[in-house]
Structure formats: structure tokens, C-alpha cells
Image 1: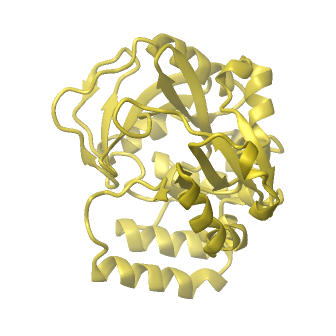
Image 2: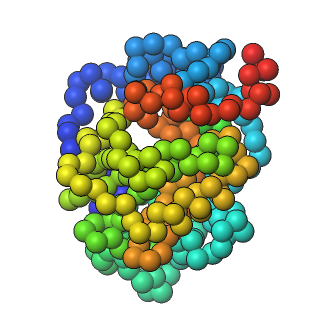
Length: 305
């Protein structure tokens, strides 16, 4: 039973463990104070929440003030499928085989493996179920219960994730050429793709590469993954993927649309409103201000301060 979480290939050091301890200690603080302190612990500066300029600052402002009723639908991994189907067609939707809160209610004899099992209300959790022994291991583990108990909306104060009941979802597993399919992440501002981040999975380790919308690789790296070495080919369906991303994002000032390309088909992975919680490292530092300039943050949010 393999985790869907991609390793960055390195161990978690003492300093990172200490940060996690501090973050747990400050969970009791109000949203604005918590966000400011966690941001500082990661990036060495406080976010500008009054006159945001950088992309990372604007994500924090969105977390604090934007209560768009569409957001909970967009981040719910089950509810978003109807949204995607209505916008671009059900051919782009990964098939759901079961959804509920108790995996013991699943008729596993009717489920064709491999599948992905994950919670609907967050990220960084889930497993690939490829054989009967994986089903047994998952049912015997405490993972599903822990997933449902996790309050993702409190960890980074991402409001939308707390506005619906968490469930577990069983999906068809898309097959990539080497491992899981590469993940293409389209940063869409006011309906236009401005940056593409590619997350590659190779032997359980994750690498990344950044591209302009016209397919030119950019000399950028974030704080999350090592850059992919050698040439990284974009799929022949890139223009289709850009079109899909822009159609899905047309009602927002910003959203990251995550897509998969499998042979001649494109599938929607998820819609991300708060990439990496908006903390330093979620986008390349060199482009933090540039991406912030691309984001016309809703005026009503700025007027709240």
C-alpha cells in the first residue's frame, strides 16, 4: 500500500520537527496571529496583510477574508466533480467508485483495482490500493479514521475546507508511463494561465519543473521539490489543458488547476485555492512578487482592513 504523498527525497531534520512543534503550540491563536507567526517561522518575515503585494501575502488575505460560496465546492474532492463536469464535460472527471465515511461498507468485490483512496477535505493524504493485501492493510489500519478526524481548515486556516462534511472517496487510478501520472499545475489569474508547474514522480520521489504558458522551461525552483534534471517534455495536449484550466477558473481571481495527461486524454486532479497554504516556498521566491502582480485580488477583501 503506497502513499500518494510524494517524498522530496530527504529526511525531516531537527529544525523542521521543531517548527511543527511550534505550529501545534500556536494553534490556539486567532487566525490573523496564527498566520503571521507561522509565515514568519517559515520565511523569516511577516506577511503584509494590509497592503499585500506578493503572491504569498495575497493567499493569506484570501484565507482571512474571502468567503466565496463557490470555494467549498471547488476544494471538496467529491463535490468538485459535478462542477468540472458542468464546466468542461464529464470526460475530464476521474471516475468515482464509492464515496462515504466507512470503508467497511465498500463492496470491494465490485471494485476493480488499482484505485486511489483518499479523504475529500484536504491534501497530503491518501493511498494507492493495487492488490487485495492493500485493501486488508488499509482496513486494518487507523488511517481512514485519522484522515476524517484531521481538521485541514485549522492547520493553515484555509476556511473552505471546513465548510463541508469530510468523506472518503475511492477513485479509479490513472496509469502513468513510469509511476503515477505527472501532475501539471496551472496557475490561472483572472481566467488566464500565467505559469505551469510540473510535478514528476519517479520511484516515489518528487521533482518539479516550471514553464511559461507557451511551453518554455523557466529557470525556477520552489522550496518544496528539487528541480527535475534533464529535459522535461510537455504533453501534446498542452493547449487542450490550458483551455480546460481557463474554463474552470473563469469565475475566480486566482486558482491553481491541477491536471493529468494520460495518452490522449486529460483529467482534472483538483482545484487548489491555497497552494502550500500560501507560505514561503509554495512558489519560487524569484516569482513571488511577479505572481502577486498578476493577481488582481478582489477589491472587497482589501476594503475589509
